[in-house]
Image: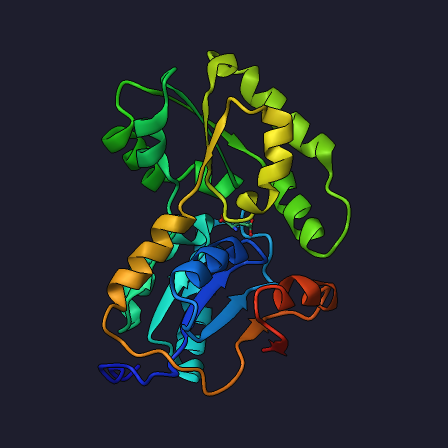
Length: 270
Ligand code: DGL
């Protein structure tokens, strides 16, 4: 890929990428911080869910897709709004793309600063919770705390359903809460890391099940601040409406209202 123009053209978009709707939780925070920024919301809907895939498959999909999308849409910056993809492929993507890449990693650092009981729950995908990246964050920022990790893939499906206007599977959330509480010290969790970008989309349902005393922590606001910092001084002006770009057409029509609520009225299928 050629070196991009600097400073970027005012209509150069921010590319926000996830496997599905999860990255919309990051888009919400980016919209608050940078309301004038042109955005392309990209989701590998044909590859969803990432959480049950191997590291090799995720890395190949993410690097390949972001490469193609960067060529095609010339974004000024790409945000991997997915913990699974970031904890596996962030380094590789940074090596191949010549634009700033902002990743999403489990918010263990802020959670460790907030916990009073010293017991932190972390829910993410199967792939995320087994990453060395997470071990390293735990060793660096949560020394002396207890971090209880749980794979909660059914909550990815619940968030996808919610954004399509379907009922949320509360039993899946109750099961996740129960599985965490059953772990040693699990009943003293006071801080819950939402280590999957789909999960903040279920924050009300999570609060209902976990109760008001368990604080939910995710990285969206921090990511938005980081993007604002990296694009400081740049001009933003839309020359066309914001778009969503999906790799598969299945089930995307039902997402139109959730996308429209976020200022995205055009869907492109790659
Ligand atoms: N939203 C993604 C994350 O943050 C994962 C969803 C999936 O399994 O594809 O990890």
